[in-house]
Length: 498
Image 1 (cartoon, rainbow, N blue to C red):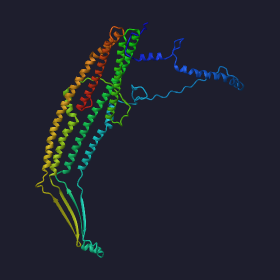
Image 2: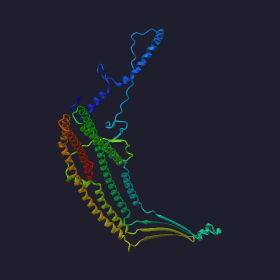
Image 3: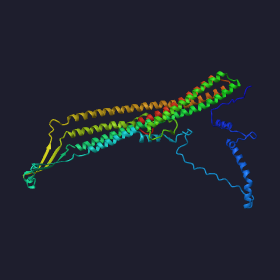
Image 4: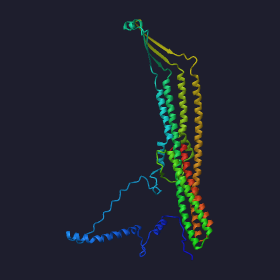
């Protein structure tokens, strides 16, 4: 005898869960009205309490009657219910994961970038280079210290009888002097200028590392969004296919399909289950990679992200982006400032070719007579005029110019390549959005409808299911690739937004 089975199939929704809840809830056989299970479990307790109350009621009622007159129409004491706890305002919407292990910390892209800039250990180590360069500036601004010297001669240490002031004044010799080196040729100013220019180069290099880290965080964040989207899609498809599998079982019981077709459908369930498990693993890896990029101390092990994959059209031309990149790129600015820094080194090398002047003032006391002497010492630059360092810095200036030109060409090439990649990815996304997604969904719905009514074979239904899954996953991949390409173009230009 054939059993009736449902002939209408749709994607799983909240209505299925409501129907399942109704099937699990017991009903009153007389009126068909559902009542909670807790009332059935509480019935024996209520009966026991009623019996105990009936046993104690006569004695209690008699004792109360002897003490006071009975009250008429006594109103029952209302039961005071405990007040519900105050609602705690949430900083963000409730997470998608429900359960005891649901993450409590959720961050968006902007928060992830700020946390990475504050906690990434590599960037924090790079920032210490600025402090080191500023320390070199302080060192470069220091002047030479004066030198003080003194001596005492002809002291009768081994003849104690002559250790007196008169003998010291007549036979002893005492010298005291001070000397100072005067830097000529503007050496101190040249050192300060060279150190200051080097600090500027270091700052731009750290800014370039910040730019790269920001792009890395964006790319990791988009990978997490893609993994979450794939996991949601895999769970939805698994639930939908389980509904189709239930229909197939009913068809098999009714004799509409063979046992072989039922086995094929059951084996196809394995594909959806493995896709769901793989999507969970991909999400775990993506979250771990993002946490490593941000810093393990910035976010806990269990956390989630806020955001979704979305398409953003490109509205700027490549010429304007190239001009902005040539103005903003920190690595290009650092390369250009390196030319100025090497110029400061050349100025310092030429200043070091000028010899320093050392002056000395001495006081000498000998044979009871005090003398004051002054000395001046300066080198004669006949052979060593610092020619080697001057030639070295001139070669470094030429090197810095060539390197800056090479960086500028790399910037232009990178901007054009990133721009072309973004346009290509956006074009692929527009193709999917132009109708292919809708066609894939319609094809699956038609195949399901025809398969349930026996107008299509199981292979046709499975093929439509496979095509729909392929189109959906490829669309999500294309959307994530477009977002990564946009972040890459922002990083190549050196700006914050396009």
